[in-house]
Image 1 (tube, rainbow, N blue to C red):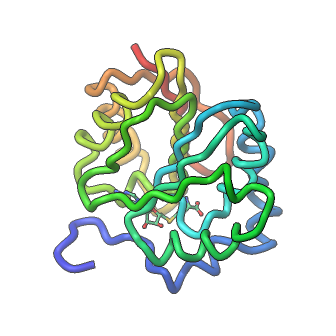
Image 2: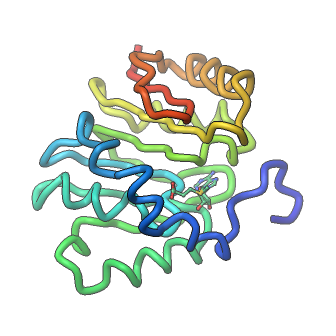
Length: 185
Ligand SMILES: C[S@@+](CC[C@H](N)C(=O)[O-])C[C@H]1O[C@@H](n2cnc3c(N)ncnc32)[C@H](O)[C@@H]1O
């Protein structure tokens, strides 16, 4: 992706992000169940082709909604095609981020960042923005891949989040991934 320091996952790889084997290894319901409740407003940044998005939308129910955000139009297009005409279509708002800004203004109960933080070049600005749109008792759940992201890099991301007023509440077990559940100070 041009001069971007951290390359983003290309659209051509979207098939590997959404298939039955992954659903078996990383069941979205199991991963999200402890955090997502009916009626919630959820922000998923880096939704990609929407592996988690449809389950998120089912879990928040008719009174909730999910803002599915990505900086690649092609990823949002794939998700759009998947939800068209489905019962969850009206619960999902597709949002195109800028390279250096998510660009949402409403407040969220839960923010989900799966396998995407390592692709963000300016993590300090990213977590600052997330902190500003997180409700007082809201949570941010970060999951990063095991080999691609070193322990040191992950811990550095946590420090950036801390500087934005976010503290680690838990390290949910999701072997072999690296995880952190944040709340506001
Ligand atoms: C490896 S994919 C993971 C997609 C999805 N979370 C999943 O687990 O299937 C990372 C996604 O994050 C998006 N992304 C990377 N940096 C981003 C940013 N700063 N803002 C929004 N989306 C971003 C990429 O375009 C890509 O779709």
